Length: 475
Ligand SMILES: O=c1ccn([C@@H]2O[C@H](COP(=O)(O)OP(=O)(O)O[C@H]3O[C@H](CO)[C@@H](O)[C@H](O)[C@H]3O)[C@@H](O)[C@H]2O)c(=O)[nH]1
Image (cartoon, rainbow, N blue to C red; front, side, top):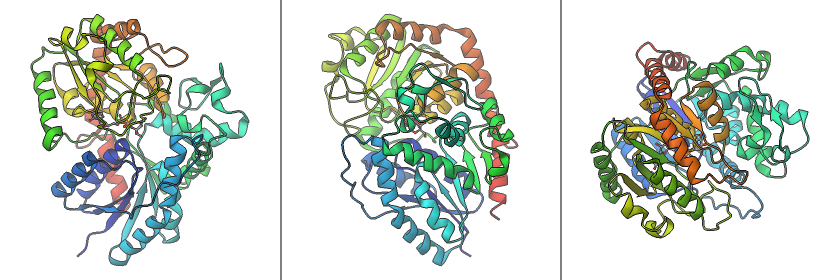
């Protein structure tokens, strides 16, 4: 007999797709078939294609359904990258409806699991009587903030970006500077703000919210969500399932990428225990050339060994950091963007790789003693599970909120001082790298949290139980 099916719809971003696939792998062990809907035309890249092929080969119960291509609508250049992405996802709503209706003809769809940014897909599932669940790819602190966002919106008429010096009080969160609110909600004049308001207002309307976190990691936010301080429980129809940390399974990439990864791991394996700081800013964290040079200077002066992943620099010197203008993998000359002679001077204690490193595997190596991270949620969880202390350097999206939790509540990271324009000096990089590599206290806290994370996903752990409850509700 055909197995019951769960359909999933991740947002088109590596951090979002990989986490959703990890959730799918867990769910399929409970005898469900999974179809993952994918858009075409945004973030299509050979690395992703190879990744999807590997998943279907290893997990026959998981299949991917690629939508027909929908061209990205020409949007005014004043509109943010997030707004364009949301419009693109919305333009795929008819693809979602068609796919769900076709899949439903042959199997029973027990649930439709969507990313927050895919809220535009909710309506068609509900009209077909399919229960909708969110898979929240950030942590509980951001969930608390987003549940509360419609209230923050009602209370103010100004854009957060203009509220310089204002601190917001959000249940379950440390006081947060208004200018550090997640990027898509900073500016009321940007359509992304209104999209986010719509998405967040729909969170409580789902049957459930599945969160990639676990209660011991963020007790403040988990309690605030449970107690109904973000949104009264009476108004919240959704059950909350903390099923994390979900971490991407290490794999061997093919071709040149695979060879580069192996070389990277070989180098890491040759270094002494806890001697290497790993520096990486997620799937699209890019910097200006001058910022890259400050990082290089800081790493060199710190005296520590390092593995540094450098993406193609931003084309304009003054461009906002973190917004990658080039496609991943675009070629550039490493030596020409780094300080003169840097690669030669540091060749015995440093490795610089272009674009990508096998992060989960790198972090798991004994020689890695610190991680300079952009605070993307997957990276945070990967750092936690590896028990590696972090330097928190948020760039965009909801990363400032994550930084507060990593530094304030989890105490597994040190924050670094960013100038008003976002630039971080070489001295600051040097200072924070030394601090994180040399502090016994943060290392001990990181190890404690690692054990809590492993306990949560062990046989009778809280996350395993939450997932079992979720799938049980579908049978
Ligand atoms: O060289 C690299 C760079 C990244 N990764 C992997 O790519 C993923 C990156 O995910 P994440 O750390 O979450 O960063 P982003 O790709 O920037 O993720 C987006 O999505 C996340 C989940 O919603 C948000 O928390 C982030 O702010 C948002 O930018 C992780 O699994 C990394 O291990 C590598 O393996 N090698």
